[in-house]
Amino acid sequence: MWIGVKPAPHTEKKGFLNMRIKLSAFATVLFLFAGLVLAGQVAGQKNDSKKADKKEAKAAVKKEAKKADKQDAKMATSKAVAVLHPTEGNTVSGTITFTREGNAVKVVADLTGLKPGTHGFHIHEFGDCSARDGASAGGHFNPASMPHGAPADKQRHAGDLGNIEAGQDGKAHLEIADSVLKLDGAGSILGRGVIVHAAPDDLKTQPTGNAGGRQACGVIGIAKP
Ligand SMILES: [Cu+2]
Ligand SMILES: [Zn+2]
Image (cartoon, rainbow, N blue to C red):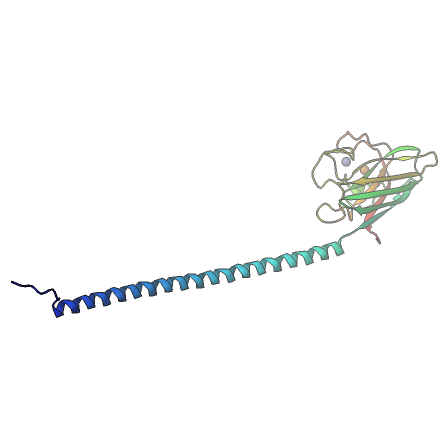
């Protein structure tokens, strides 16, 4: 029996159909792939815009913070002053200025009416000189809960400024830079008291330095820069 080489018409049709199916499957895959690529691009764009938004928000926050810093700097106290008056039965008086110098505060004291020699000299907790003996100024200003010490000690009251020395004329001049004192923020010395004592501060005895009576008292206030 002879079998023709020429494929039967129905087979040809089937082959054509097969090809069509193959083609349409290919097109579907292509289409899906294109869709995926497009979707990926859109998602990428969305991501990009999200990133840009985040960047913008960050920049805005930074700008606000800078503005606030500038405002703080404008509001910050650069100089403070205490005018000291004698307590009852004493003659000590004078002026002490506190000036911001970088991260330190420069303290300049000029006093008169002292007994020649060394006198304990501190910032006390309260700016209250109403008591005749200065006791209303409270203890040494000590916001960090430290023991009493010398100005150069790591552990000291913030108010521990050590001693001031008077000459034979009863006058004393002192200039020190202190990195513990602050004119602003938590632990600021504004509104606190300054006391000059009758005796030297031994820089050891807790919590007073055994500096004796209070001979002059003043309140730290904001000064004209
Ligand atoms: Cu004192
Ligand atoms: Zn102290």
